[in-house]
Length: 600
Image (tube, rainbow, N blue to C red; front, side, top):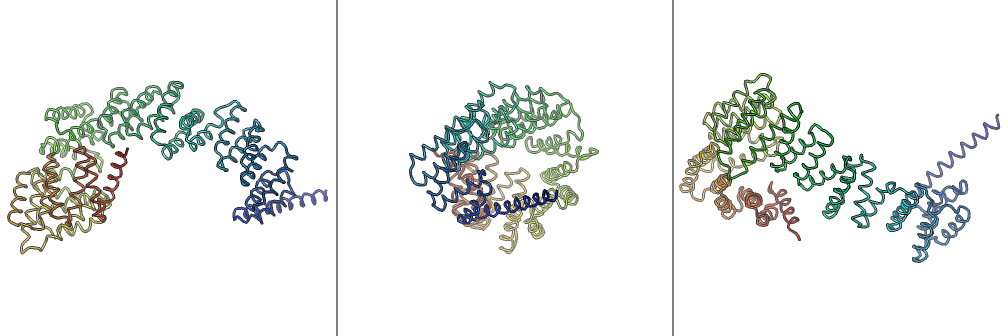
């Protein structure tokens, strides 16, 4: 018994020493100290000559040390001893490659392929060796032979797809990726990541073509239409994606969730027709018990409102028809906390589209009396209501509502928005000192839009207050801006035109031009808008509004006038001549996007 324990102790000690030696050898190899590593691997092989790992590492050391003859001799000796280690032919071929003896190398590679056993591990090991050598052709042949030997085209599908991607065989790459997806549907997200990273437009076209066939062959598989819809969404072809999602929803008897999410995505990306179609699908097919029914009704109405707003030819009849849709919805579902977001939207619809401010105020007043109303919906309603009271000229009602939101949300974005509106109101009324103090605080606002607007107004006041014996020009300009806010444009323009006559070459001139350009663009009188933006740039190229005008010109030509090439000219001027502008990065991105989309 004592002898047995002693022997066991010696064995454990020997194994421990061997493990430490292997760790040290691997460390030398990682550090590229190949002479020391070779010595260690030789010693380890003397203790365990069957180890393919130690032997392969030793051969790598010999190759790095340019001891090719020694490596060849060792391989031939091992071939005699372990004839079934077919990858030895691969290693020998690698040595011939190092010598430049390509014919001999090819002969050994073919021998390795010929002797490949019908064993999954051996196939993968040999293919990985070829891949690591950069010999993708032999790696492919190894996997292809593995498929024949094991009579299973799915077993190496992912590996083959990856190699076909590297070698540029688009058709086979897509084929084997889809075989892999068929066998492992849970790999969908992983494959989507690969496609996003590596696929070209031609690859996506091949993927689309093969997916149609796979959907026909496997009508019960969810992954193929899901992937096809994802492809369409990536291309922003939301209408085609909707076709796939509707089919999936019907086939799987789902509750409409994926269709609803697609509708939201399409709406956010500006495809309002598809968004409305998605929402209508749910309301027409899922019934009132669906968790997405009411939200779909609401979202469809809001998308319809946006669509009318974007249509310069929208008639009042269309607007009245949409009003009926809103009211019909509220008659069906009542005016309660569930429909509160839509009631808020109805108020906005009356104010912004029908210009019926009194109706808007009435709707929001009713909303704010609702018991249990969500505090965020209430706060937004108060901000909107404050604006509508300001449009009517009821300054104190407006500031009271803004102040309530400021008090209720002191550390949140809604509170910052309320403080900005209150400061802007003071600016409109000529209280420039207090307004500027608030704008200075809001320079650090959480939202970039509020912060940028606060900076603009603070700098504007600093630039003009005290430049004259009186603040009359600035007061009159601020009053004109208030009139524009109140949709009293004719009165505003009269003040602005008189300013230019009474104070020729005043520093306010560029702001007058810019303000009129903004107003005409809002009216969709683009020729006049262009004229005034151009005046800003030509007469005041070093002024604060020059980069603003250039950016508005670019966006107008790109989005409203449909001439991206002309738009790119304005964007280019911004990032070249105004590199410190807050529009510079965005202008560069838009310029690159236009250039990429117009290159042959």
